[in-house]
Image 1 (cartoon, rainbow, N blue to C red):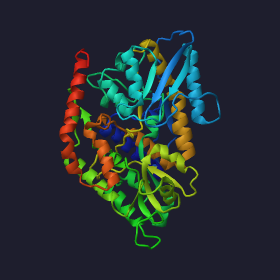
Image 2 (cartoon, rainbow, N blue to C red):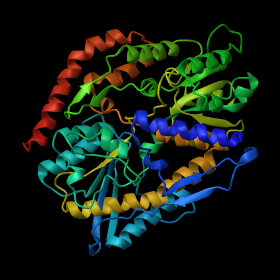
Image 3 (cartoon, helix red, strand yellow):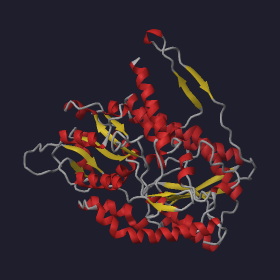
Image 4 (cartoon, helix red, strand yellow):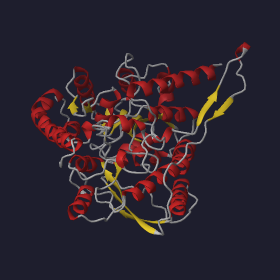
Length: 500
């Protein structure tokens, strides 16, 4: 009965996350079944589970024989990534899933893939991805059929009129489950979608914010079970910090916080943005009129950011920057640090950790918050798009749609079930937390368009130990609104059918 209650509580939290942070799960959390229905019988025993299977969603594209045509895909963004790249079967789950997906699409449409991997290079709005697509468009060439471009660059390309509206591309159907439905809601401007994300790739999943915790430290200090705190709606910012403070200690007794001491939190700099998002706050939103508006200026957002910036200056925190990665990670693996605020890509670094570790969503700001909320690391994330001069939009649409469809069949399970749940984590609770994290993801366009440079400036504040967020906001508000006006005017012109 206890297990049943736990499952019901978690299900309620996930459904709540759909409502408060959007109505959909991430591409990593979608399947083709309705799940398992559990019913309690007299005496508290569980009845036999009845699994109801939905009809499999179909791939609705016009299948043509493209006679061996080459599909040129370019990858470009701040992070190095290898979506679509798998030269042969190796026995590694994700590689083989990508190979199988590519082979299925190649056979279905009779195409061959050539991947130009330019990822891992600067992408600050006019970086490598922007330049590659902008050069192609300005020259009127057809260099790439599909582009996977860094977040800052792709948003800049969008409002400058360099990208096709995905909704208008034949064979692309963003209502299908292999596309992220929350992107449809929160990235659409005036009914147009210039870039999106889905099951064709994994980078957005790896960029998803999370908190790792050391289970041995929980035991050593007799602290509350974080999983139960999540289930009972008690996983809040105050609880997070109070637990961290218990662990902080000057182990070597030299009176100075150094890499040999014990810490409550190992902090990565972008966690300041993750914590704002965890409270439900955003830098900007797209309103019903199709305009982006600044939403950072609220008392709650100021409180969240000021509190997190201030915590970073306290001895309870070991900051990545004040220590090397090796020194900081040694504190976590050596059972001298309780929490580590990072993103899912970091999980692979600790798979061989002798002490067990688990995963958590970022905490709610307080218990009155409707649901947990999570986002992706904008600096690292990339999005799928089509330059306006692609040679054959219909073909590009068919290929990307098929890659997304087979990606859901092959790549997502290999990543989510086989690798994350099956290889990196050792407990069922972590799998539950992953479900919750992905179910509660949302998009904040304010971190994409560099409005007043707020997202980078708040990270700089964290690096420098500056806690006066209110002054920084006021100083840059005029510049932010100026950039916002330019972007909104450009989108309005496109929606009206004018040149940007």
